[in-house]
Length: 571
Image (cartoon, rainbow, N blue to C red):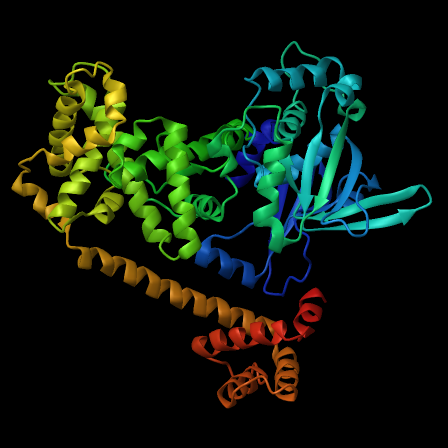
């Protein structure tokens, strides 16, 4: 069967990836290594050891280390000019690379190169992106003159001095923070379009400004680089928030957490969160037809949502329908401001349970968007205002009763139960009345919906909800139980992770840490005993709790100067 599948689809296959599963320990940092060609189709191989498989089973974190070896894998090291002095805040370089080289790098790593960008590829629909495409095809020799190039960051770089000057050999965690459109356009031009000349990428040269940003400074520095470097396409307020840790966590959840089958699906799916503008069409567009069908099954179009969608779902539920009515960008700014404040206090709340309940709100919001226009009282217009006001009203009324809508149940069903939908439609009819009957002297109903006074009037309306709704309500204590259970599971997972790390570091490493800690008198008797247990691996295996303590002790020892771990991991 497999041979038949390969035979029938061979003409549409563009690259081959081999996966080697082994019970040996994989020590090499690089991944996706080249292994020649088969029928002119490039072949790469990836090694999966038991540690990686265990990591996948726990959390789905299967991504390769993003190490770009220009010399070994992408046609040669790149000549660079140092653009920073010894006392500069960042180590910086200016370089020029071939378009074919940049296209090959994107072919392997795709949108992972753009994770620090404020948006992903916006396709060739905009005027700027069409211009990039046309220059690549018609005037490749003029590309350098016409294009602004790319701005990139890296955690670390390897520079080698040659007779002709310094060259960039490799870059660790290379991120294109400006120039994602240029990069993806070059990659897209590798495929010839009907009745169009094939792009001669060896004749294309792209300038690159590269800044080496230490990981501890990345959260603060990289968003500013994105902001000040971006000028080719309009950057919205939502774009500029793309790199906040909250956004990163949300994207990770959306790529990993499987949504239940629900009542209308035959398989589990995922909700695609577009952290950087253009991610969804880019992820879908860079796949073959067969891969695209698989992608559509995993991430249905109806389960794709953006940062501004997220802000609508959350602010509606939070009782801010008048803010939601002010428009996508203003609403997002208000939402992100509050998220930043909460995140700074503690990020614990934004866990997987929070994500699932947010998706439940999305399900309600989108169901109302479809159901409201079908109601006999709906006269057309103001649908967006009616939807956000109805969500806010039900959430507010339930809060006044010290009850909560069972969002976990909606997540499990992946749909809105009839009795719950009826409650929201009851509120929607009231919202329609409030919005379309503004106070005397107010003529613009859209502007009326943006006012706090409009929401205050909606809050005062008394609604008689059906008793059937009670079956879908929880007390705050009942809702908190789910959160507590989730955190207990997470604590277990953290213990497993600590145990895996402790065992992988090995007995000799822990003996060194034990000796160093005792010599510097930095450990309590209990901690000494735990590290003694770790130093006897595999004869004695420390418990998950002991491993968690051992990792805390190690972190403290490292802060006081213990450096053997760096040597151990780098071997």
